[in-house]
Amino acid sequence: MALFLRRLYVHKPCGIERKTNQTLPAEFHPELQRFRCHLILRPMLHAYCDESHGEIKTTPVYVFAGFVGTSDRWQEFESLWHQSMKELRIRKIGCHASKCAPGAGPYQHMTPNRRYEIQHRLIVDIVASRLYGVIATIDMEAYRQHKPTLLSFLAPHDRQYYDPHVRAVEQCIYQMCKATAVATDEPIAFVVDQNAAVGGSAKAAFNIAANNPGYPYRARLGSFTQSDRMHAIGLQAADILAYAAYRRANAKGSGKPCWQWKELRPAIKNTLRTGPKFWATLVERFRAVHEARLLSGN
Image (cartoon, rainbow, N blue to C red; front, side, top):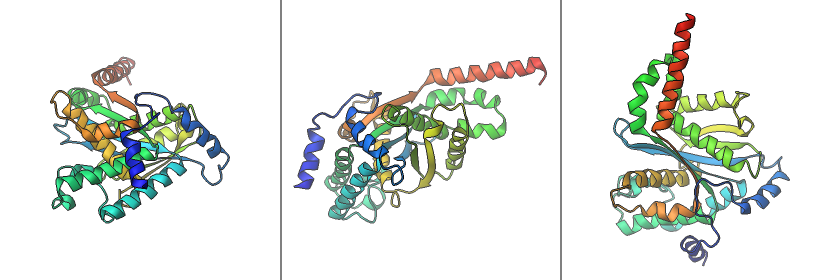
């Protein structure tokens, strides 16, 4: 019966807001008011985030996405998904969307129907837990176009902070802080999927923001931890959101449907795309600073 109700919740999500780029839903507020009364036990919101992209030299977009929610909602999700993984007999592998969808890795011997059921059940549990989805997308064609000029104005040590992964992480974190600010000023504990190549740069950028008095949401930056999807189960939710957003971005204009995006839609509340205008403006700003330094002789 519980599974049936969760399925019904997804297919008939009565009262769930479907628009993107909105503030935190009003129904989030009562829980956060109760949340304030237990600051000693639960001082933070929690966010789990992951990235999705193709080959860096050719991928059209770089996506970083995740869900933010109270401790209660994450506990509900973990309870539901642990039960689902047990019923699906995937407790040792969980759901890794980019491998599960095409039938790669540990899912290669599974039928398409079973692989669909794994992803579908994960989405059902996400939506039933009322998590708040946020997506940041970097336009990589624009980034590659402006990258040589942009990097030429930066000191070698500073170039790491303008990697697409780092920029996407910063944008997603900013949007999560901004979207939840209407309901609470509590800090957010961020858990992101491990990234051996640029994860250290992303954490360094987070620490710079957390220690910058001018950053508008400095007090909201609770902690930044890297983990993997089997130790931090919330990352499996972030993984399928990032995968769906990346697949949808690539499918635009091709006529290929993205069923994962369609089913996740009730949980997707806020999206941000960093396009050509952002990179062009950034280049011109750094150019002006560079020229001013040349004129001053510094």
